[in-house]
Length: 359
Image (cartoon, rainbow, N blue to C red; front, top):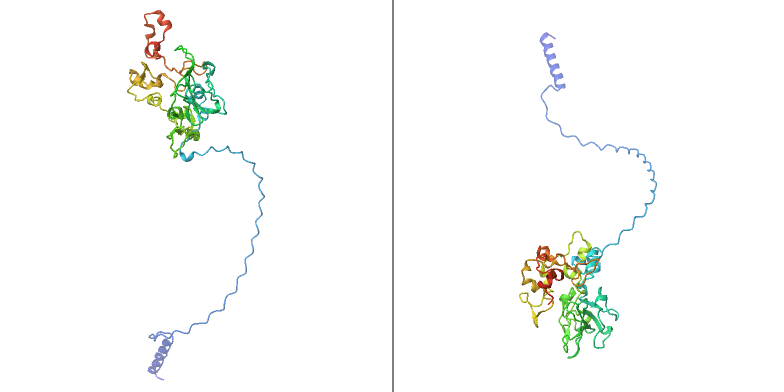
């Protein structure tokens, strides 16, 4: 083989080799091969070891018994104030109660219990309320009207005030040293039927109910009682209002404290305030508000001079030595007591003997 022939053979061999090594042009892609078979499943792992059980804790020692709780207070009636009575007020207001219970206010109407005559603080001075008139016994009487120091009337078991016949005397008047009169019986609406309709000023919590009306309540179911009430007499709550909410929460619920003279004037009055009623030339009783309203003292208040908790009739050395007087006349009228021309007048007369005579 000559030189050219060897060269051709070499070139051909190189080309064959290059084709074998992929150096030639890329041929068309072949078809996807068939999917391979799933491999055999792996073996389960070895189970984990069980944990050890915890050690049980020891039981604690039993606790000691707790202290008994205090009794709960009565419910507050849904937030609506209710009457609780003067004795309950006295549990906290002991000083005021001691004064009040020796005044005339709580005895304006007193219930007769067990056929026994009711008693009052100054019976030793007044002689007390006598047995009922007209041959009646205490079993025939349901209530006594008044009886503290001026007069007394009687309410029968039917609720009507005992008046008797046309010539009967059924009101007892106590002896009066100032007027120089002895005690005795006088007529009161003699020959008339008189229902008890005085509860507005003689009771606490009065709710009127006309006689004959069956749709409302008559006290003790007595026909002649023209209303019902929580308690007889002018008790603490008659002026201060029902006290249940205050008693249950005294620091946050206040009672009514009305120092206006018009509060006193709701009872110490007769008719219209512009008229001072008189009969036979004398001013009628319980006209105090009209008298004050018509005077220069109208600018003042009743309680400026008088303590409403105390008796204005009887002194008591312990709780009421001044008969309810808070301020003497000379508190404002300074020096007037020493300006009297007569030494006898200075020694024997008081300011009120001339300026507030007992008429």
